[in-house]
Amino acid sequence: MSESDRDIHSRPRDIDVDTLANLGPLRPLAGVWRGLAGVDVNAGPAGARTAAFEETIELQPIDPQTNGPQLLYGLRYHSRMTKPGEVGTYHGQVGYWLWEPATGLLIHSFTIPRGQVVLAQGRAAADATVLEVSATRGTTRDGICSIDFLEEAFRTDSFTMTVTIHLDGSWSYYQDTVMQVLGQSEPFHHTDRNRLVRVAEPTPNPLAG
Image (tube, rainbow, N blue to C red; front, side, top):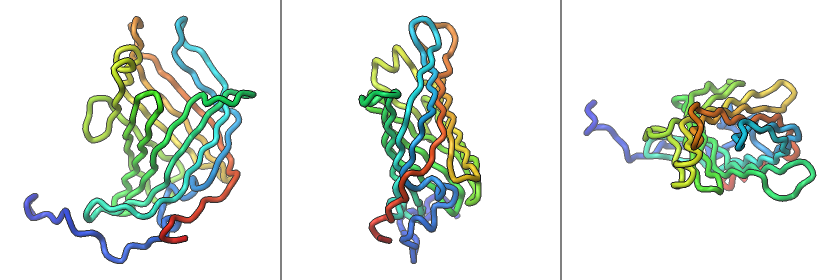
């Protein structure tokens, strides 16, 4: 079949609207989560500095999504981090986790409220317990876009996130964000990690609720 003959407009038939039943490797992440032992290693004026943080992550199922014949199931994502004993937001992210059952495509997209967006991709089987997504600056398949200040002073060249789902129902993540900091000759690895436990069950998506 040539590219011109490819059907890019018709939607899949008989779509199962129960997102929770079709999330594959993302199903264990659905719900509201709390992590109290986060560790952030970031770039300071004198080099690497480490900060502790606490985090609440909400991952709620969305209705099935289609790109023509492509069918995706996913979770709406909101993360809010605070420093221990404080109420002000230390860091926040909003976006989506998506999975395509037909191919195993795994997508994580998020926006940071300081002028940066990330689209990261990977692959995962339905029963996978380790998920990895990555993004590279300057590509169009996945990518990282930043406002002028961040591009000049703290340019992000790549992002990798590994999620591990544990037997006790908790899950943890490790993020490695490779940056070029203005005035430094070597790339800096900004890392974040945390382990989270569920504090509330997910709410069914609107079509299934």
